[in-house]
Length: 223
Image (cartoon, helix red, strand yellow):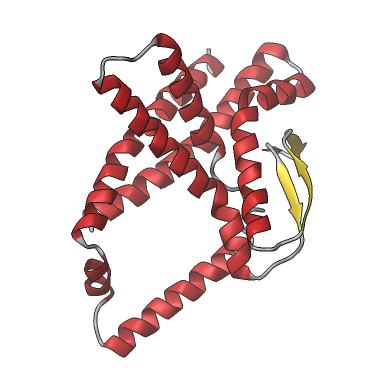
């Protein structure tokens, strides 16, 4: 149970750090160039690879779920005080489909991130790391970490879906006359626990990367 809690905490921390970093980086760029338009263009260039993966994840999952899609945009737009990095327009769908499409970038991002970290350590153990590969790995981890999380618009229907899942789980506990902890523990078999342990370890790398880059940008903004 503790490893599952650590995983959820790390994922939530990554979400918070990605939002804080994007905001502080935007403030730093604006401080240097004093132009809102130039700031948006520079943010678009910096995050383009990650935004590309993010929006294509929405698009591909929407197609797989037979949801009609429209315009796909990979460039940021400033709406009020918030910066929207990209978007995909699609027709309305049921809560479950919207939830799946909404979290698609997180699922794809985590998969790419874990595979990249695994490859990094595999090459490291062979003593075959080069400067270019390390640089590409850090840039890739930076891009995925700071663009994979869904926006409020992406998560439409998510709260309703989550509430329904919790209700079903609660009914199952009542019908089976058992506690939620016992049910969760029964699902946490040894292979599952080992996978969560590995995920906990792997997530520390992008967490440290995001934490350091956020502190640096924050420090530069306050100079």
